[in-house]
Image 1 (spheres, one colour):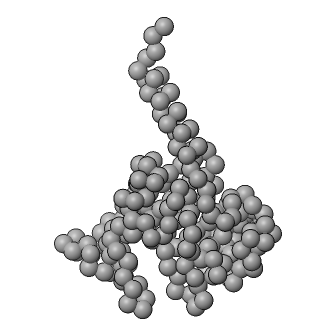
Image 2: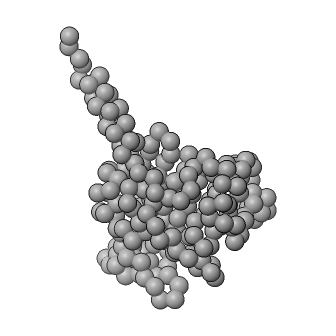
Image 3: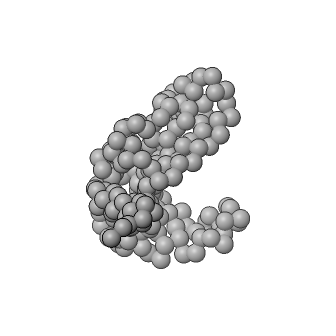
Length: 194
């Protein structure tokens, strides 16, 4: 029996995707699909709730896509939870928060990734992303380590059967509030969603 090269490639790709999905170790304190009450039991009450209605008022151009969604900000955990019909469908972990009382997330996220990891560290822990999107660098490309307020971002995506992982990396150093500088290649945000 002879197997075509295309069929063999499809089998290998499917097998490697299954291994990738099976190798993901979830380390966040809350899980996608959890109820709103369950998230509150784990993280406590949110400090701030941003309703779909509030977003609709401020950004009417996105109103059609929101449905019954809203975000809850858990300042004491450094987690933004996105709910749709009272079910958790997205989690955002920003590398820093400028809100008064915001505490940056300190734990592991997936496969040992932390907000302190750099681009190369992350690839070692997750493997090559399935998709990469680079924002154009509008400032001088001569010195990417010179901090800018709004740096270009590289968004990398990994897909499992249950969720998508999106990690945004700085393509330039970033000047943040209070004189803090984030290095080129550092994580800006981690998003996990269904």
